[in-house]
Image (tube, rainbow, N blue to C red; front, side):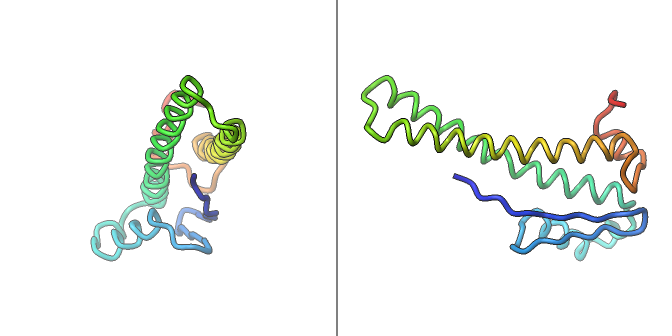
Length: 134
């Protein structure tokens, strides 16, 4: 249903480095934005990181919509007349959902570490990503 791509990010107060093996639209969008808009080059690293993470998170909306549609179809099949492979299909969707949950949990933990000041950059923008959390 969906395919993941690993993105490694290294950053400090002076640089933001991304490493990936396959093209990623979120990263490409950021590169284009930096190339086209000279003002972006003046942004602090925490703002650049926020913008990149925001674009990455935007990629989850269509995936979740697809899951919703798939689950709706499975629900209809379960009520009407489930085919013999029905349980296999449910198992596949469950595996995909658990994989997505694992990925999102790791990303949430990274965001928390950054928010708590354990990351290399802890500016006001990163602090405001998750207000009220310590």
